[in-house]
Image (cartoon, rainbow over the protein chains, first blue to last red):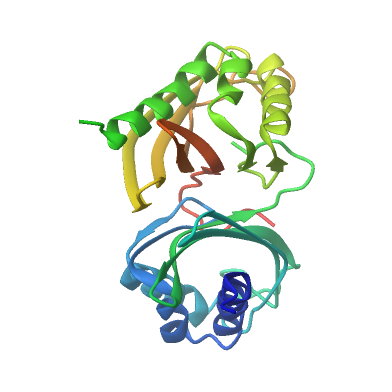
Amino acid sequence: MFDATTDIKLVVQAFAECWNRHDMKAFAKLFAPNAEFIDVVGLWMKGRDEIKKAYEFTHAKRFKNSQLTVSDVSIRFPSENIATAKCRWVLERHVSPDNKCLPARHGILVLVLSRNSKTWSIIDSKNIDIIEGVSSHPQ
Amino acid sequence: MFDATTDIKLVVQAFAECWNRHDMKAFAKLFAPNAEFIDVVGLWMKGRDEIKKAYEFTHAKRFKNSQLTVSDVSIRFPSENIATAKCRWVLERHVSPDNKCLPARHGILVLVLSRNSKTWSIIDSKNIDIIEGVSSHPQ
């Protein structure tokens, strides 16, 4: 039996695996051509190519050796061919703009996926930093 | 003709209107009972009741007189009865925990909506602060 939940978990794992080997070509292929991605600081990337370029840029230096671990994957199906997936993540071994090691960073990744024939692609993605102990960012 | 785009724009406007009159009962009704909402600092609210309580709390003080203005509403239909809506927002007249006026805050709201008979409800929502000039939050 075709198990959509398993397939989507594999996409989420692939997101982390492509990140961890810094293979932005494979990373971009997880997204539909017209996918959108809004990152932790509100950068709104429109289309697979913009997503690829933005992550090539960050993985050239700041995330060059970074390792992303995802957990607590939660999946829902608002319709047969549409899914939402959320997971918590920890990012380690990333550096500041002046190349200093940074402490582990925690966040939530939110994906909307669409099934086209048998393949699930990310059509929308948002990434959120968890900021403990505050209810809004420093203004 | 039934115009889903118009209906969804009305939901987005209603989000701001309920916020601006601080009517969290009406605000909560825009959400499906099992809706989830992840706010700007990664607070993950599960279910309409949690969403209502969290915003009742912030609107009792910090957002008591705040005014939210939405713009640039962008809507897509990954399937007939599922939509994503994104918009930019400006929040004004909000205060700090010690009741000091804060400057206008800018962000992006991302909604996933589902149509049940003729009504569109928010089933997933993420809110993102735009932080200019940085590529990640202060660690």
